[in-house]
Length: 65
Image (tube, rainbow, N blue to C red; front, side):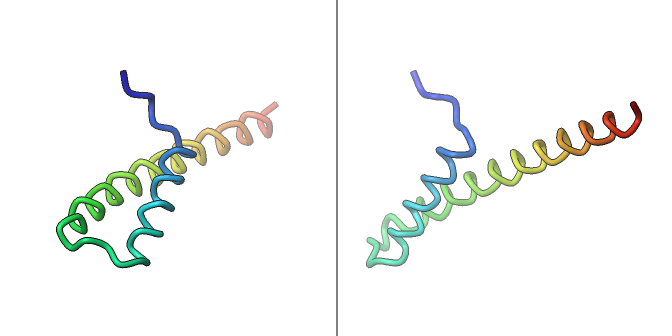
């Protein structure tokens, strides 16, 4: 059973991939790492947008009270 991805786990995995890319990486693994990074970046971006909208809605609710 796989764990549900969170922003924190995705960000940590991105940092790991970055460290690997900064070192000598096996060229055969490069494409896979970059594809995974793309998925993780998309997930993090979507999560941040979602949280931003939630915070914006909370402030708008507060102002209307």
